[in-house]
Amino acid sequence: MAHIPDDAPLFRFQDLPEDLARLVFEAAAHDVDKPNWSCALVSTTVRSWVEPILYRRIVIDTPWKMTLLGQTMSHHPAKAPAFFSTHVEQIYIIIRRDRLNPSYSDLYSLELLSACPNITLLDFDHRTEGGEKPSLKIGQHAAWRAMHPKKLYIRDEMFMPSHRHFRVDENPIFTVLTHLELKWDVIRNGAVTTWAWDTLSRLTTLTHLCISVQPMTDTLVRRIAADHLHTATFHFPPSLIVCVFSVSFWPWALENARIIASSNGATLHRRVVVAVNRSYYFQELERGDDGLWINQTIWRWSNGSQEARKDSDDVENFWKRAEDKVATRSSERPLVL
Figure 1 (cartoon, helix red, strand yellow):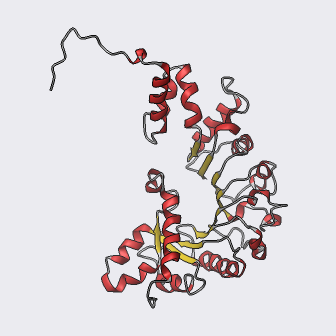
Figure 2 (cartoon, helix red, strand yellow):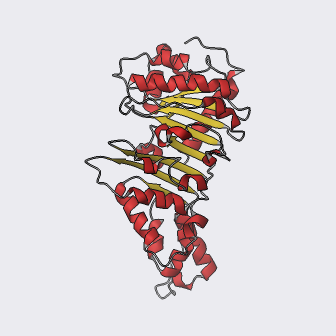
Figure 3 (cartoon, one colour):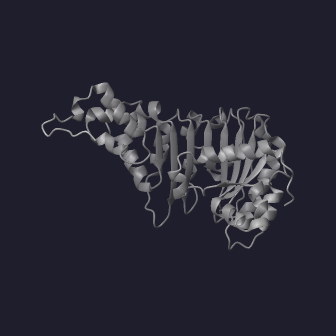
């Protein structure tokens, strides 16, 4: 290795041409780990370079983060009025509010959605102990009418009863939708949601649909979600490539996962694929011949898990596995479950 003389002039980062320095900071801002957000603290100039990148994908997973962002939107004169509507492309709001998770103003969620009408992806998993406030729901606030995402991941009870249908003139959030996941969680006060599945065929741009049951829900919720799936299969739009029935199983659960997977998969419709949680999938594979049936399903990380958050391509890989399962079925010898 060549020796660098002690009196050699030191290179100073400040000596880089501005265009090269900007490229360095923009590359650092793209890093999903540190130092991406630290770049915004270097200087006012550097912040102006990296913030449009940092705010492309907003992830809110605690009430405190939502509060901080709400305050930033309300009291930050350095940002242009159209900053959020111009630069924000994806929003993930994954918040559970309970006694251990302090409250924040629900208005912050609505303010964020109102400020970002041009997003292409929305994952809205906002939960409270007593159920959602009507003011947050689709069909109640104008923010939902202004956005037209291509990908939407949301719990079914976030829709007002009058908006549990797919008529885009009344539900404009579905106008250009290509990917939709409706999540079933709990039954509140004995209420069971109903959907006008006969309107599903109106979504002419929809290519990927998922009906999912959240982890730790009871068997009744699972049966209700399965009933919705069975009804939906009669109204798949021609554009649909795959429909996933996503459900989590646990080793101690007293249920026959094999039967559930069989009755809600390819035997129901050639475009339907069952997805199970990753831990259960590989646990079954370890059982040898007794676990071969699991190959008729695909796996996914549990929604909101730390592993899913670390895997930036998690959702895209999940959809790709579902597509591949449908594509290969015609060439596979059917396996009796």
